[in-house]
Length: 110
Figure 1 (cartoon, rainbow, N blue to C red):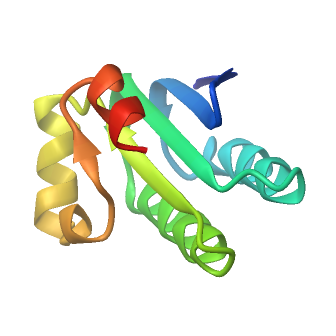
Figure 2: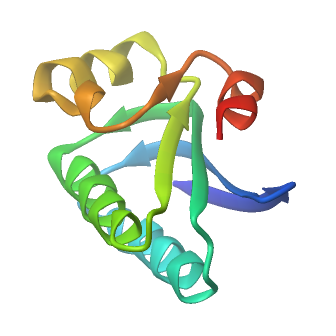
């Protein structure tokens, strides 16, 4: 799993590449914690290169969403592959996160 970060205007963008599972979730949680500590309130998780997400990955995203919601923050997702999107649909997470087809769409909305 590779995680990269950048800033686009006032949005923190996290790009995920590879597989988000029980062994890689802790790394993502650290990134979310650091963004929260830094006072970020708008976060985009770019999933264009995310091949797989497990229940542990979903749990990490949900936990971060709850944390950011406490400070009126928001986490959005973009570029989900068909397989990853299907996991979000089956788990009901499409109603928790705003999901955009492209990064540009998400950045405009945030």
